[in-house]
Length: 166
Figure 1 (cartoon, rainbow, N blue to C red):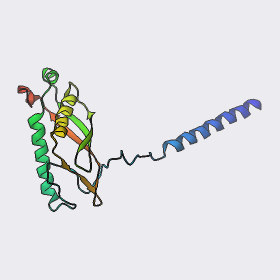
Figure 2 (tube, rainbow, N blue to C red; figure 1 turned 30 degrees about the vertical axis):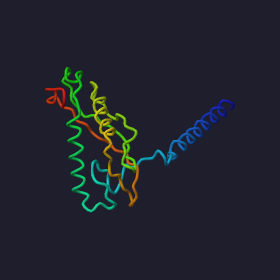
Figure 3 (cartoon, rainbow, N blue to C red; figure 1 turned 90 degrees about the horizontal axis):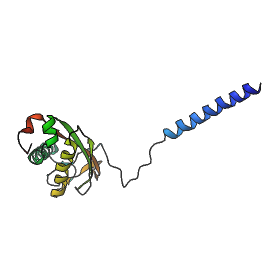
Figure 4 (tube, rainbow, N blue to C red; figure 1 turned 180 degrees about the vertical axis):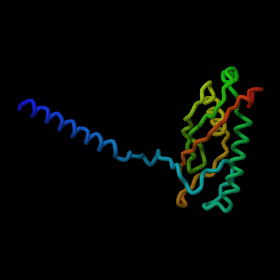
């Protein structure tokens, strides 16, 4: 009888502990408003576009222009690392950063690194983009400029290994 009572106490305690852990793990995270960055917006941030009030009169054309400028800058300034050239490595590195409401880039980091120093090379070119000083048009959500979490893929291919620049 004593063994059965002890076993029931153990099972009951384990069940209560499991419920407590389950309840604690499903609480929504506490977000510091100063660190939160939106991932969804009515209008995404635009690189190198004149700041126009929300809503942008021709957002689609401005988005294409911004994407073309961003791609041209990255292609002109990225360099293929010697270690990747030697290994004939290719891939896509992803750099994550925040576009602030004033159009500056903050908190740059490598989110995806295909190896052979390609992530570091991508971070270097995006850091150069941030240091260049050209501001972004911020993201807008519900008519208000917001901090935006931006993922920027930087592609490296084996065919780019001919020279120092890619």
